Structures are given as C-alpha cells and as structure tokens.
Image 1: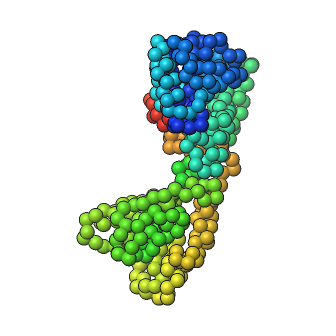
Image 2: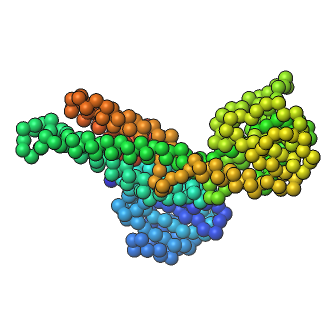
Image 3: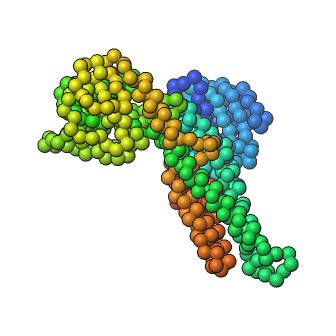
Length: 437
C-alpha cells in the first residue's frame, strides 16, 4: 500500500439539502479523528449510532458511523463514513470541524478512487467503469458500467497478459538454454499457435469497440433536410417536448440542437440541424456549415422532405433514411419514401422510433458487456494487436526479435488496465470524478 501523508475528507452523497448526507474520510489519521468526534471507535464494518461532537463537546448531529480499517476498505487506507442528516448547516458544521484537524484537508475530485487505484484496490478499467456507473442514464449504460467496474473486462485482459508472459518465458528459455532437455525444441510451435489464437481473439474483441462506444456515448441520429421540411417539429415529436422553435419562417433553426433520449434502454443523441440551402445570410450560412459537419458524424441520418411540395430535384445523401413529412396535407411528391409521417396527427412516429432502434441494434450486437468503450482502449489494444501481428508476420526472423514484439504487445495491453506506467493518464481519468469519489 502506498503511504499518503495527508488524510482527506469529502461529502460523498448528493448535494445538500437532502434526507441523508455521507461524509467520507480516508487516511492514516482516521482512527484518531473518529475518536475525537465520537469517543470510542465502533466495531469494524458495523454501523453504530453515535453523537458526533466538536472537540468542545457540542453536538453536531446524531447518526450512523462506520469504520473500515486498512487494507479492507475502498481506498485501501483507514476509511470512515459518517451518515448524518442532510441539512446544509449540519454538513457545514462537520466540514469546519474536520478542516480544523491537523493533517486533514478536503479531497480533490476523484482522489478517493485514485488512492484505491494506487493501493491496488481497483485497476483503470474498473475506475473508468465506476465513473461510467455514476454517470449512467440508460439501462445499457448501466450494464456496460457494471461489467467494467466489477472486473469483468479486466479479467479478459489479465488472462491475455498471462498468456503473453508465458509465451515470452518459454521463448526466452529456448533462447537461453537451447541444449537443455527441459526445454524441448518444439516449444516454439506451441507458443506461436497460441499467439495466433490470441491475435484472433484480440481482433474480434476490437470489432466490438463501436458497440461499446455507442452504448457509452450514444447513437447519433441527425435530422436533415431543406428549410421548413419539418425537422424541428419532428425533433419535438420524438423528444415528446418542445426543444426547438417551430415557425413557418424558413431558416428558423440556425444552429445544431441536441437532446438525449432513451430508446429501448439505449442512449440516442438526436440532432436538429439548419435547413440545407444556398444563402448569403452569414448566421444561417454558419448554421448550415455546422449541419453539414454533424451529418458526416451521424450514426444514422434521417433526411426529410415536405410531401406537400412537388419540387424534388436532388437525391438524399447515401445511406440516409428518407422520410416524407406533413402527410396530413395533400401530397404532391412523386418520390418513394422509407417512411411517411405527420407530426401533427402522429402518423408514422412509432414506426420511425422502431426504425431508429432497429438500426441501432444492427450496429450494437455485443455477445457480452465485457467490451471496450473508450478511445484510450482502442489505442492501446490496437497497438497490442499490431505487435502480435508483427510477431507472426515473418516466422523466419530471429526468436529474440519476435519475443520483443510480444513484450511490446504485453506492455500495450498492460496500459489498458494501468499495470504498466500510465502516470500521464491518471490526471485525465480521475478528473472525471465528482468530489467525494
């Protein structure tokens, strides 16, 4: 366990006022601080009702106190939790009292989790999963985060790392002791057969990255079309609330509007864009530029046209879902549409929602939730895969060079879980956390 000179504290529950407030303290000074606040220490890991007092004997509040002696705690250090009433004055009074102790200070964002990582209680995958679990808003985000925070994804990488370590050990044994009977000459054949299998497994695993990113970051659905085609009305109808301003004036929407929706347990990011047309108006032209940019980033593009207008002169972007709007008005269009809808009377809206979910699930078909979900994962896993492929590319190369490829692959894999030097990543990762976690 890494020693930390300072003991930290923070409110780990939600913002006050609330029904309950949980103050967490972590560090070597926890037993002494707790004794000063409540008298005798409670039994480890047992919630005990106590009066929390100032050092002058004034009662701050009465609540539950828990003590988690090191190393059996979240951070691996001595940890205490004080469960108090969630009034602002109560929390402020306890905060002032704790700050008055020598060697105690408020925790920085993510500092409890960072100490847990540094003390070997969590790896980086589990830390990221914990951050995602706190931020999860949909069922599939929750499932993905639980798999990562509970070590399901990490166990895959540790298994691969062990196989790489064994392969390197056998190859180096053959290099160092080529004439020893305990190291048969056929060991290379066994090693490279397993490396080949591992390469296939890692390549297949990386193919699941898009699904992980969509589950975690959302499925981007962009609504595009000409001015006054009904884009903003469609966005409001799908969101079931007024997000965009709707008028009969062409060019009302001049920026990209976005709303998060939950569809069948998945996060869908819905974008409304400025109407696509030639214009000399500076603000509208900038809105169109932004619309064209977000269209290129879309996972699904819904291109809409007004059925009541017969002047259809250009084809929609390739791969777009073509939707005819305003079906409640007399139709003058001769185009064949994937769907026909009316935001006024609701015709076709459920079918459109179903189509969005169908297209989403076509891209997200994970065999399990133990899948990568971040750009950081992609970078390290791709580097590991490239090194493995290099080790297999030229069997005629010397064993020492091929063993070096395996070392590079193992180091890259270790960077995913943080078991290799990742100091430059830590500030970024733990900065995602709120105070008190």
